[in-house]
Length: 77
Image (cartoon, rainbow, N blue to C red; front, side):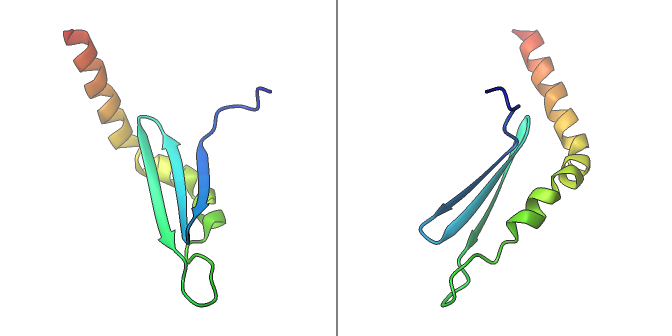
């Protein structure tokens, strides 16, 4: 179908909400349990997904350092 690459996955399982974000070479995972008697997670999934550009910017230096390290490792082989 070619809708593009998946950058986020949201899962709901046994009272836990998981949000995985692909910031290759990093993968961020956020987890939240249901808040109690009323059910529902304390995590605002929409807000978290909307923050992806801010997270990408904040982690850009770390991502670049990891990529550089990976390139150095592959060049030694």
